[in-house]
Amino acid sequence: MSRHLLLFFCILISQTLSIPLKSSYHTVDPVANALQYDAFFKKFMPQPITTQERQQLVQLTQTVANKNRARSERSLVPVIIIPSLIGNIMEARLDDAEYVHWYCYDNSDWYTIFLNNWQFCFSENFQLKFENGSYISSRRGVTTRPPHWGSTQSCDFLDEAKTLPVWSDINNILRNASYVDGVNLRAAPYDWRFGPEGLNEWYEATRRLFEESYEKNSAPAAAVSLSMGGPYFVQFLQTVSQEWKDKYVRSFTSLSGAFGGSSFAISALALPPDNGQYGSLSAIVQNLARTWGSIPYLLPSTDVFRDKVFVSVGKVNYTIEDFPRLFNDSGVPASVTDAWKRVRSLQNLSKKPPGVKTNCVYGYGLDTQASFDRVDFKSTATPSTEDGDTTCLREALESCQDWKTKQKEPVILYPIFNMTHGGAVTNVDAIKIFLSEIELL
Ligand SMILES: *[C@@H]1O[C@H](CO)[C@@H](O)[C@H](O)[C@H]1NC(C)=O
Ligand SMILES: *[C@@H]1O[C@H](CO)[C@@H](O)[C@H](O)[C@H]1NC(C)=O
Ligand SMILES: *[C@@H]1O[C@H](CO)[C@@H](O)[C@H](O)[C@H]1NC(C)=O
Ligand SMILES: *[C@@H]1O[C@H](CO)[C@@H](O)[C@H](O)[C@H]1NC(C)=O
Ligand SMILES: *[C@@H]1O[C@H](CO)[C@@H](O)[C@H](O)[C@H]1NC(C)=O
Ligand SMILES: *[C@@H]1O[C@H](CO)[C@@H](O)[C@H](O)[C@H]1NC(C)=O
Image (cartoon, rainbow, N blue to C red; front, top):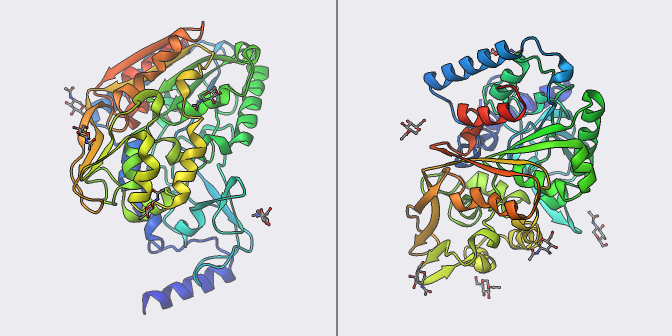
């Protein structure tokens, strides 16, 4: 039977029985399947750890559990997790969705859309477009949401099969120390495809989450974020008063906070796709990423890098100010330039102190792509590297030190040698810093 005929029957049967977007015997959507093997995923998510690292984590779990066994729920510091880019589960629902291909579904109840291979038209359903001043789904009739608001189920693992862990190691430690999901251990997942300018509802919901946590636990919560969750939390903190922060936020621990952006965002958006070999993405993932507002926001910021040359093509040098020309010259859709121009004014984080006690935990000592020097826009060449955590350059990661002189609350930097960007959530030293912050160690 031909592939198309097979697909046709799958759809016919599952539409008739209203089985949402699943096929039980082969991967239907090649884009969905490509994502977890893409450079993008590797740059931002924790990678499998060694047996020795696993043992260290188990040992730490036991030590912390023994030390805190006798503590009452009341005496624990409430924790609120702020996930990262691609760092929490996403779901979609289809209501008479616009026609794009004959094999795409029109209607479906909520289903897991990100990292779910068993679906049709992932790419079409997961793209955004910019219209009338805000991002909306590029296919009419598609609604998306981050499920499990307030619960660690949103970000322990990224997939239903629980093969792609993010926060599960840290949360195991907390739960073994008698933390309870939904009571004193919460998470604030968001639609990480949006830039920070499109997350007003999330800011509002996050504010309520801290207030609710305070009411339940009679104590301010300790926020902990990974990667882009750091900058997004700092943006959130600009929307509340100092009085509010003093009452509801005990402290902010940022793991691998992408405060000055990442040069990876340049190659992800503007350089020819190469499956990660020379620092870019695969073509299908690049097409998707170019429709999101978060990736332009993650471009390096002038705050940190001033007039650094990030890309040279032939005799032309491109600094941050030259990004519009870089995008135009490399054939990136104009919407990316527009998106960047809109979020740029939000990138100047060094001028926006969090106004709460801040622990800035980040890795260094690893080769991190810094600049790209190429003959022309079609060619590839290994980027030159500088010190960083493999995803963000060290200057960007440690730019949180600028807040030291701008707020009275302490800002403490914890550089960790050889810690990768996504690896912060499995790194014993990083985890211990947070455990000390919440008085479990
Ligand atoms: C965008 O704005 C135009 C003009 O105000 C309007 O005609 C159009 O329907 C709007 N589109 C959406 C999706 O709201
Ligand atoms: C306690 O930690 C172990 C791993 O060390 C984990 O397997 C287990 O699920 C944890 N317990 C809870 C309640 O999370
Ligand atoms: C481009 O930048 C490099 C250093 O990054 C510099 O040596 C070179 O002279 C610059 N070229 C032009 C045309 O500005
Ligand atoms: C964009 O590139 C085209 C050629 O590809 C050129 O004609 C045009 O002037 C450029 N626009 C800007 C704003 O650089
Ligand atoms: C930087 O941030 C401040 C404070 O939020 C804002 O008022 C200003 O417009 C921003 N400046 C630039 C150049 O982005
Ligand atoms: C850095 O980490 C890697 C992977 O965990 C490990 O193989 C390597 O030995 C470490 N390097 C140093 C110098 O500690």
